[in-house]
Image 1 (spheres, helix red, strand yellow):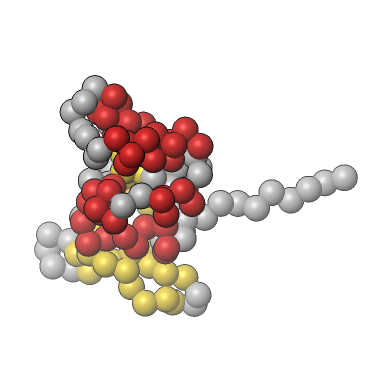
Image 2: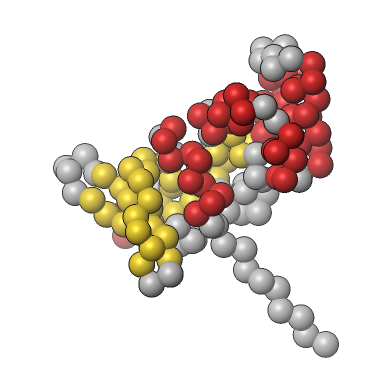
Length: 146
């Protein structure tokens, strides 16, 4: 018996929170065309076109361009949550005992729904600093910032 596996696609709700904090994406399509892989800063999210949301990019020359959020050739650049946990363990970052434990649980369980247990200020910190608390890197929907 053959089973269909649904292909994972990035959804607007998975990245919308990062937009005000300077989300960047890497565009693989440029590598094929121009021999380079640029890092593009997302300017915003464009209106839904044919049921697809689009990234909006503002280029240095003032031109706007768009590409679909679920286009496999453009992936957001994020920092794995494990790096934040390492900083907590090394005491370079401290959210307080209870919050540190909630972040550890989030990382260990890989359950993005447990983000609801965090304080608002912690969620803002994760978004502002581009931490991947939804484990998009593990799903090949984002690229790890090294």
